[in-house]
Structures are given as C-alpha cells and as structure tokens.
Length: 490
Image 1 (cartoon, rainbow, N blue to C red):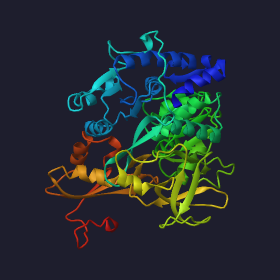
Image 2: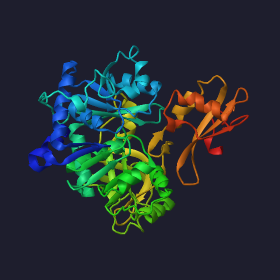
Image 3: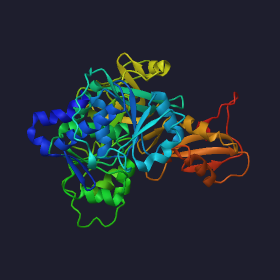
C-alpha cells in the first residue's frame, strides 16, 4: 500500500529513521520523526469520527503538514482530496461537493476561503497550523495509531482533470496505482536515499504529487517551499543539498533570467525536470547557460501519473522529446480508427500503465471516450521515433496549458458570460514571446469595458492562472450559419 511506503523505508534500512525525510524552511524531520507525527495526527483524524472510505480535503501549501496529512489519511483508509491554495470559493465548492468531502485539513492563513463554505457544504475543519487550538508538529500528542486493513484496490486519492465538458472531471487513484507510480518513476530516474528533491511545484497538482510520493519511495529528502520565489529557489539549489529539481517551463524561464548568480554553485544538481507544458528551446539553452545543466522533459497526466522521462545521454539532440516510457508503462500512437501507427507516423498518444485510473468518477460518457481496451486516450498528438522516444506535436482536445495547469476554454467562457456586461465571449490559448501558452479572451461587451474590470470579475471567482492575460474587445465574433462561434477565424 502507498500508506506503507514511509514505514517500509525504516524497516528496510534502520538508518533511514535518522535520515532527513523533509526539510521545510528551518524545520527538518527525520523519517523516524515523520512516522511519529503521522501516528499522532492519525489519532486526531480518528477522534473526529472519520471512517474508512470517506474523503477529506487537504487545503495546504507544500509543507510537512501536507505530507503528514496525506499519509495519516491513507493509513486509515481515508481518501485524500488535495486542493491548491489558489483555488477560490466557487471552485472549492465544486470539488468538495463532487467528492462528498465533509472535512478539510487547513491552516489559519487559508480560513477565509473555507469559512464561507462551512454551511453550504456542511464542512468541519481540522486545523494543523496557525491557531491555538490546532494540532501542530510542535505540540503533537505522543499517541500511537495503528493503520486500518486496506486492500490495494481501495481508493486513496482524488484529483481533478479538466475535460471537454467545461467542468473538471474527478479521477480516483488506488493504493496500487500510487505504489506503481512511485516504483516506475524512481526506477527510471534512479533516485535513492542520497538524493534531495526540491518541491516548488504544488504537491496538490498531479505532477508535484507524483514527485513527492516517488521521493518517499526512494528514501530521499524532500525540500518544500510554499510559493515559487526565484531568490529562494536559487539559494536552495546552490546549497549543495539538491540533486533533483522538478519544475515547469515558467519556473525555468524565470530562473534563467536571474541576476547575481556569480559565486553560486549548482554542481550538486543531477536532474532538472520540466513538465506540464512544452519546453521552449530558448529556455532549454538559457537554463544550461546559467545553471550548468540541461532540463529534461517529463510527460504525464492526472489520469496516468508519469508516462515518460527524457533520460537521453544525448539530451542536446533529443531535447524536444518527452523521452521514453518509464518502467512498466506502454505507449502507442494510433490513428482516428484506433489502428496502431509505425515509427515516425503522427497520431494520438495512448497509454497503458499500472499507475493509471480506469475511469472518471460518475461520468460514464466521458470515461467511454477516454478509456478503451485498457488504454487511456490522452488527446495529445505526436509520434515515436525509431529509438522509442516520444515527441508531442499538439492536442486533439482544446485545453489551454498554463505552466502545467490545464484550462478548458468552455469553463472560462461560461464564467465570463455570467457578467451582465458581456454579450459574447470566446477563449483561446496564445503563445507569448517565450513560447508559453497564455489565455486570450475575445469579448463582445454590452457597453465599454476595461481589461481591469475583467480581471476584477474573475479574481474573486477563479484561480489566478485562469484569468485572461490578454483581452480583445470586439463588436462581433465570427459565426457559422448555425450561430457557432468560429474560433479558428479569431
């Protein structure tokens, strides 16, 4: 079970108990200490009357509290629902109501977004930091909590993936799925207990979550930061403790623009991963120039976990590839009829993996489209070369990919149309000068509007990354004879 990963690390190697598992700012926790904290917090969860099979939301930034919460819940057979702390009330209400979550683990800093939902969602809060009456790592109770009998096919995690319906789709992952993900990932990346992993990508996101559980599987040390800060990241990367840095292109671009790097030593870095969006060649080259190491693309999804990692020895020539499939994962390229294509032929990328889910929760129609004959149909298009390297060329589905976070344009269009001053709207992705995708909204207003009004309307309703970066006001939008907006003509 995924809940046993921490404890097996100590059983396999007694020295692991004294090795650092997590470094969170100026706080450090050995594997032995972390196990005791998980036991202690597990007793708090049991005292709430939470039963096996229930769902509990984790509304926390990257932190030791996030890690403790997940493992404490999983040991008790409870399903975790990680929520990004940038999510706003409307989004939170959807996620909580869809999964039936009645409890939220959070800290004082984030109470304002949750308080308004306590009555509508019948929520109960479990505070782990920032309040006098909360459980905390500084004043834990020395209580031993045994785990619950768990089957490997029991659900342990809920994630949400944006779909073609405009509403995020709920994905469940089992203990067996996550254990397979961790084993496949670490065996391919070659992580071990000597590695230090810097977690700047949110662990509430499938990419960050996969790296965090894989780091535990390897017995490595996780270094957490709550928010991406360029100076903080460069300081940690040059400390000599970090060997692997999972990132997204936006982070790598920002770091490549850093000044005052003279005197900093990044020689401890062995791997830098880039995922969530295509890695522009300029960023690939600029990062190497400043940090002495090339970033390598990693490919995955909420439905499958990690699919491939580019571990090529000739990374300069293979930099545009997302690599070969990780251990135990099968990838094929198929045409529109599902026929497998040969090397170099472009089609849809489909995946079979022991770490993937088998369906979307409560969405049979969407499941039938995406999960067929044991494979997940990603909606991404690409090809595989004669060496087995995967290249992504585009997407069949119209997601907008913002630094690893995916947005269905329909979701934003529906929200904007709630504004009484907006008559029509179309949302598309557009590449900026750095080759990164940003959101552009074409709006037909009822009266004269300003960009700031659009931002203000969105900011209280959706996450920051979903807010349009460009707005073009128009008198009309191109339409088909049936009245459908023709985005291709925008």
